[in-house]
Amino acid sequence: MLTSVLAFVGAAFLIAMVPGPSTVVILRRAVVNGRRTGMATVLGNECGVLLWGLAAAFGLSALLLASQVAYDVTRMTGAAVLVWMGTRALWQARRARQPDQGSAEGAAVSLRRAFRQGLVTNFANPKAGVFAVSFLPQFVPHGAPLLPTLLAFSVIWAVVDLIWYLPLVWLAGRVGRVLQRQSVRRRMEQVSGAVLIGLGVRLATES
Image (tube, rainbow, N blue to C red; front, side, top):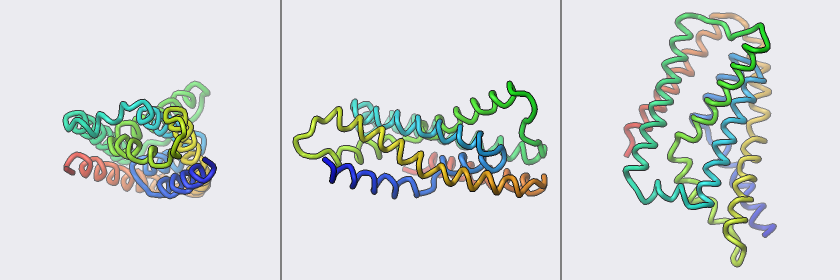
């Protein structure tokens, strides 16, 4: 079991390092809105990771493998979410709006919105579900109880992903403090918006 856990942790770190839609959303939030907002986005993303792991443990995400319709519905939903977020980023860049500051209530709403974005971005990606159902079972040792082991691996997967994103959010927060000029932030919104739209179009058009 220890060998399987160590192998799983190493593989999970390698997977976390591969950039994707979640990485773009997390870094954008951390740079533009600060570390707290970036961290809220990370927590939402990890809830999505955990939910996919739990779905794989209980066999729910296997539906994405068995049903083309289920996969396509999830894929198109995820693509629409990415395109919507990218379009919103471009619109904000055009209006050159500054991140909400001021009242504690406004900050709390911003954190909730960031958490939701992280959760939706991850959970609306059908690749994560297919990956979970094909990835997690490979590390279950022979003779180990399947469901408890898969549940434990799901938690480990989310924790490893969280550990990877913590220093990224910290560095992005420092960069965000340095890049205070509105023109720079507007350019970052434009770049991240274009990347998110590109990822959404790619997800929608791939077979």
